[in-house]
Image (cartoon, rainbow, N blue to C red):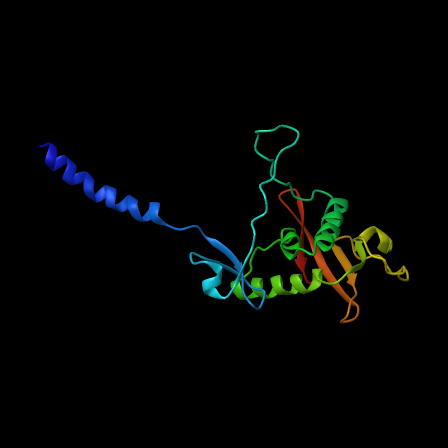
Length: 187
């Protein structure tokens, strides 16, 4: 009877082996700057490994989990987070402020690429609905002050960037959902 019970457990043990044998996921960037996640080493994919950021620590209470970052609840918070995303030149940080509801794969990838191009440019000016023209120094730019322009509608964020390709402007609609303020393309 014991042999029969052991034979029944053998298939369960063999099912657990593949899960145990899986390699780590390698985070890479290909030659075109696109992210690549693979179970193979990055070098075998002609890609560069991306170093994982060190785990965040909670200085206030060591040993406790780091609290999740909350969403922007006010226009001032949203504005500051956009400025922070540009300062870090991080399209993912800016994408985290977007409301992605109703997006298909192709549209989301295209918009992520647009955000990537946008944050690579210096931020010259930013306006959140109803506020007067912004001081570019507050956005971390050394650009001269722009001429005052009309304030955007209360449900819109406008920004102006500059760089080698010239000045560009972008508009985002501001949507309120679940007590948070989110950006959407095409304000």
